[in-house]
Length: 474
Ligand code: G6P
Image 1 (spheres, protein in one colour):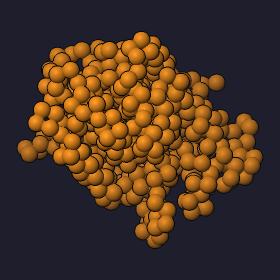
Image 2 (tube, protein in one colour; image 1 turned 180 degrees about the horizontal axis):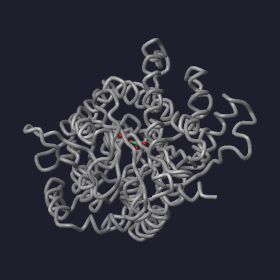
Image 3 (tube, protein in one colour; image 1 turned 45 degrees about the vertical axis):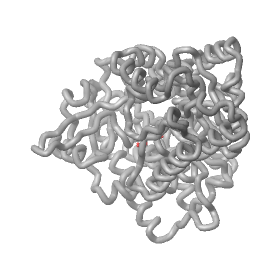
């Protein structure tokens, strides 16, 4: 404990390390999550005086936050991690999360708008913006309360772009970092946002001592936006420092976890679905507009047209886990993925061969089973901050795999040399890349896969998290 009684290290993110499900009898069932931040935070050790501030996302979460009386959650639910979950009013949360973060900001940074009719920045949008401000203010206030004198605070992602400046006003003594997990839009696209809001977002992040990104490309785009929107001299030297920390795969965890019995069992089931002796093209994504799943399916269909010799001999294993289903555009995209997969199966399938094996129920053990079986990994996002799947599959695959990778994924910066690189919009080019991947010689494939795995694990989550902290301690 520091002298003022507050924590020494604080993490803030929308989604926390635990979620609650309310049972019919009113009891709460806690479920712990994974991901880079969870394993990253474990790097500072169980004795560290660290608190994680996150939002209550579900009704169960809200109930747990209420039962905790606005304080920290029971340590038994969180695996010992100190967690404070903020019970933000549901309509404010929904405006901030669905309306601003996952619509406006996600769409801008991933360049997803169909611009003749979108975006619509009207009175409704302004109302949602006020909720986004309130949501960020709630985080800033909670962090200000929880932090000890001179504590280090690392604020994560686009949900919380305003919080660094808000927190700085409340607690000038703190060392504040912000980390963006998404791409950052180039100035011409970023400036689709109303000018005052564009300036507020940039100024919010510049309230941090250190603003960090997953790749040099996104960091440069952020600085270019600051110049274009705020003025050529901003950020000025000595103010906010810009950092690049390319989160890598957690090899140790993945290799161990992917050999546990539940994964073996799912491999047996998957092998049966795929059929004896067939090659596999594997993709695993949240069903997310930026992931470009539909064009991936269309490229696979073109492969079957251009190279009919692959019919009956290859299967596209596509796991597409529904995400952000409160938003109609995500629901429509989820339906479109299903429709195109069904269409391919109806047109090309035979009695003994299902060309596309699509699963939509999230199952981590089955994802790992697919990673192990992958001959080819297809990662073709329109834009992506990093894409950890691109890094995980080469680490886990049993026989080494060929990675077909979009040049618009952050992972391209580190893996581009040993991947088969595609323009994600080019369906014909992606089909040709799949053909190249399927026909690559064993030796070349093994060598490339080894180099991919090494590059993918260069900065595991623990080291990545320590780099964020290190950037603030000097
Ligand atoms: C992206 C974002 C994360 C987010 C994740 C899942 O990776 O950068 O901040 O948590 O997507 O999205 P969700 O909306 O389900 O939290």
